Amino acid sequence: MVESVAVFEHGSAYDVAIKQFDEAAALLGLSDDMASYLKTCKRELSVNFPVRMDDGSIRMFTGYRVQHNLARGPAKGGIRYHPMVTLDEVKALAMWMTWKCAVTSIPYGGAKGGVAFDPRPFSEKELERLTRRYATEISILIGPESDIPAPDVNTNPQVMAWIMDTYSMHMGYSVPGVVTGKPVGIGGSLGRLDATGRGCMIVAAREMAREGRTLEGATVSVQGIGNVGYYAAKLLEERGCRIFAVTDSSGGCFLGGHVDLQKVKEWKDQGMRLIDFPGAEHVSNEDLLAMPCDILVLAALEGQVTEANASNVGARIIVEGANGPVTPEADRALERMGVQVVPDILANAGGVVTSYFEWIQGRQQLFWERQEVESRLEQIMSRAYDQVVDTAQARGVTLRKAALVLAISRVVEAIELRGFYP
Ligand code: GLU
Image (cartoon, rainbow, N blue to C red; front, side, top):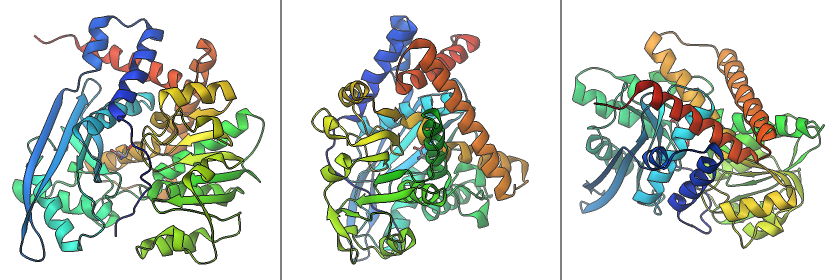
């Protein structure tokens, strides 16, 4: 049931988030006081809890829920299950959620959660028990008005259903609004599953258009064929792109535009590794990054394109489906090379934007047709993209710096409007 993603090299996501923030804060001329406020996470919860395994043994787990900043609204952000989860990583991811919600102008602050373990060997029942216990441990923070989790790496609609049920059992009534990314049958939104990939496709199309090209005939490589990577690839292919190569944590395969993505998905859904995909030519992660193509979708984890490998990147456009896949040092090298990076807080915002739609639909008890979800998503992603490009051009900076400048200035505006309590 869980999707695996690539784990290659893992830098400190928090250092990256702070470096990015400092650069944008300098461009904005932010005061030191405001900068130190915004670099600080408001709440950081660490929990250690036991779970009974199928063999009767008890194992201890560590999880986190961090809220970075709530000036623009309730905390919003996913929950990931991954062995590399640390408090530092969750803090960085929470901070990126604050900027992501601000750059798309949706009324949320940023949060993130995670449990440090590898879910792959776990049975469905073990995952359910772990999820319910973790949900209970973080129930002092989460709630439909306070902090709303969603899927992230290795979590999915079923995990959200367990969290929603656990929270509802404690309250004594159903609280669908406590999570987004739920199954449609219990208040999820149509179009949420593919929303992050759809957002990647929308910004890729606009970035190509800026260069006077369409997606028709464009070549695409995808690092990490999990939920985000798969739907980005599928939707890009539907618009005429050729999917050259895809990878998972086992490495990857060269598809050359001829292998059925659906078959790749079925293979992955059976828990198989891409390296064993029948008839595929193997490529390493480094080969994938170096492969000449129009669009490289990075949909695995943080710290994938670094100072060490940035100069080999063969793509003209990078779309960050993952959070934090390119380090600040790599950003500088890519800028020199003329590679455009559509940054995470913009490129992968389709997921949280559609989470917002799910939350609104739940509050109104009025559910939209898929068409409405998709067209509203297109509208918000396009508006955010255009505002980022305008800011980049006006300031003569990269799309990442422009997106951060825009986002940070919106959070600062909210803080100043609200004033300081007491
Ligand atoms: N985990 C996703 C992200 O990183 C979605 C978060 C959400 O929908 O709240 O943006």
